[in-house]
Structures are given as C-alpha cells and as structure tokens.
Length: 193
Image (tube, rainbow, N blue to C red; front, side, top):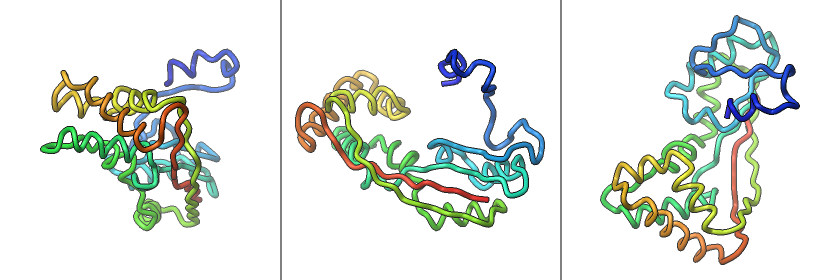
C-alpha cells in the first residue's frame, strides 16, 4: 500500500509515507492534531498500548479517528465465506475473518480500552452500507486469495486453495444470486479526544 500510494503523482510533495509500528510510533509527543487508522486496530496485539501511542503523539484536544468492522453476522459476504470454508474444513475451520477483522466489534470493550489508554471524549457510531461486487467469483477470490484468510487455507491444505475459492463462490451465488451481488456491510466509526 505504501508503494502504491507513494507513486501517486498528485500526492508527491504533499504527503510523507512512512512505515511504522502503531504500538511504538517514531514521532515526538504532541506532534499531530489528528491520528487516523483505517480498519487496522483489530490487528494490534495490544490495543491499549496502540491507543496510548496515538494519544501520546496527539496535541492537547487532538482527535483519534478509526473504524473497526462490526460482527461477522452483520457483514454478509465475510459471513457466507466463513460458513462455506467451515463446511469444507470442519475439523479445523479457517476462522481468520471471524477472529480478527470481525472479532473486535464489542463497543463496550473498545470504549473501555480507549479509556484505559487515557482518552476521555469517546463517540462510537455504527454504520451500515450495502457492499456490491460484480460477481460471486470476485468476492470469493478477494477473500480466499487476497486476504490473510489465504494463509489459513494454505496451512490446512495448499492443494485445496482453488477448491476453497470455488466453494466460497458457490455459497455466495446461492445466497446472493448470479451477476452483480449485494450484501450488508457494517462497521463502527470511532472518534476519541
């Protein structure tokens, strides 16, 4: 993502791209007015530590803005793919989507961890939208081959990656039909000061 973004001519000279550990930011105290994180906090091993780093680099009254996926049951494509792969690998289902991207959705927990890091003014809004894709096949490839879910499928049996993708495609088409498909997508939008 950094390589792609840094190559954008419209951003050259206006944005500095830097890879950093969110739990040990390489910036001074009170450096920024705003810190944002786009669907990344669920990957932090120690969320309170990561939130504390965001707070540390914020100026007084600075804002931390981020989002986190809602429960997998409220994110239909991810839910259908997870159910299909659970049926394919019943002894050891690949549950990455349920465990990680959609595993950090408890609003009370998010609020508690932000408070523990030192944030005081916290607002959380849940938003629902419709996710659209040109086909069930595109969604199946995206999830099974384009996310860390792929690693879990390969760890179970690398020779079954295409089969897993096909199973996901069939399940998505069965649920949402052929051609362009649509499903509910839900996330929390969080602002903390």
